[in-house]
Image (cartoon, rainbow, N blue to C red; front, side, top):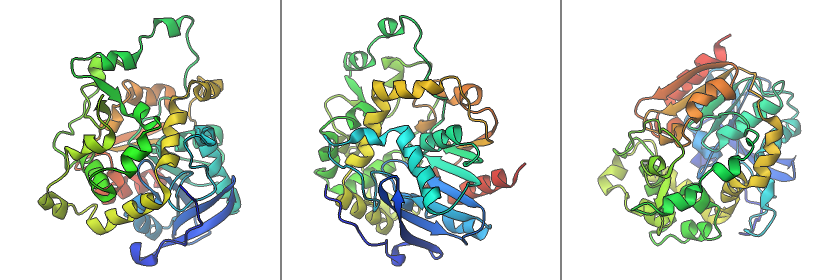
Amino acid sequence: MPQDDPPALSAALLPPGVRSRFVDGVNGLRMHLLEAGTPGRPVLLLLHGFPELAYSWRRVMPALAAAGWHVLAPDQRGYGRTTGWDGRYDGDWQTFGMRDLARDAQALLAALGLRNVAAVVGHDFGAPVAAWCALLWPDVFQRLVLMSAPFAGPPPLPAPGAAKATPDIHQALAALPRPRKHYQWHYASRSAEADLLQAPQGLHALLRAYYHHKSADWPGNQPFALSGWTAEQLALMPTYYVMDAALGMAATVAAEMPTPAQIAACRWLPDAELAVYAAEYQRSGFQGGLNWYRCNIDARLQAGLQQHAGQRIAVPALYIAGRSDWGTHQKPGAYAAMATRGCARLHGSHLVDGAGHWVQQEQPKAVTALLLDFLRGS
């Protein structure tokens, strides 16, 4: 997708007190930033996930600012109104790896003249970025909040003979009586962006179904811990994680499109707000965000992260997710490992009632209260 520099997001699309601007010279990016609160106050850095934007923090930013924080939420590399990244499938996709994304966050602070932040908060795919920020630069990122994606620590060094002993999970999924595939490997495929961007139902309807399917509004979201990384266990998750092998994501979520009455009742994402997401992705495309998945499953990039094997995050940390969010359990064992291998000072783990995967949008008051309680603690 072409990357003409867009203007700031219209104030009419934002809550009072939230403003849109750009910061140049951020690790090669012109980064779009949503901001709330008074500069000079303690800083909170909020990092979004997929398929979201800085806009996904709109419901918590005003309250955090009113409580005395200077709140920053960027469109991360590959997203929204941030430009300077390579949006081609055959382009420089390896710049979307975890260490590069963490460097983007560090470079944003440097460009703003900030030495540190009181906390970095990451949701969904923003959670591991926030975790790597805190792991690599604990003096800069002084607290950590992980949302909807546990961090089990850096990838471990492989045990001798492990590669030969590990069965191919993709062959096992494809061999199930109902053949399946894992969504992350689908998102890494060449066809994934066209499947989303050219969805037969249209981009707005695609996103409506996607957000609904992963929210507490979808009654099938009743997550539980899986016993292991096996095809049979993974296939117990909803199809937005472990898809039918013959379908793309557009067709997968189309089957769960909410009714007009359900859409009208959705107070956390009314159509006017959903239209902001649709317009942004229509302009920027999805390939930037999809490149994160390619890096996440690339063996060479994961091997580069293994130099940190055995390290734990030393700063105070907190975990927040929706009680109806399968993200907590999508990688078996990660939730428990967060306290033993991921974080040395995990101050709590909170599952919020009435929320699925989009916890800060579905239950912003509860999330804000948990954040403030953690930030004010010792």
